[in-house]
Image 1 (cartoon, rainbow, N blue to C red):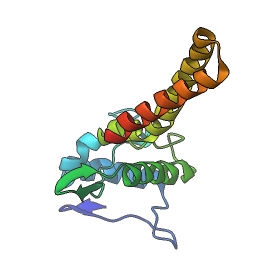
Image 2: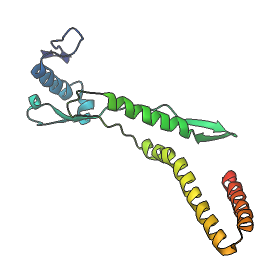
Image 3: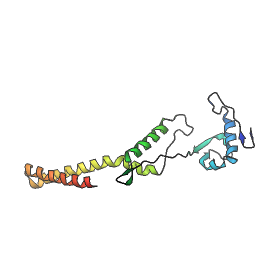
Length: 166
């Protein structure tokens, strides 16, 4: 029954609602009353008939700050951000038996963290391919292997110096 904002449900030994119809009807009543602030977090399959179930839901969460202080500057800790994002996704992927099939974690911060995840690999791949092209072109244009290798070593040291300053 749902009287004066009090909702009672039949529960099993684990504390979960045991009667599906009772759960959905009382959830709908609660969202129409004292739980109205959560009404926008739920999408019903059919708004008029809660017995058809929930199509989608949104659960808010807060991620602890992944910033760190380096040389008196606050910067994002890329490794901590990627670890947090991957662990949240892994926890959601491990959930089974969900009504919609799966849950999808999302926050706007994941957009920037996704960049942290791939940028290191992409930088090494791009730099490596560019250096390979420089070596081949230098070898073809200079046509002396020792001189081409010395020029290539100078180019590598210059690029390492530039990347080290960034």
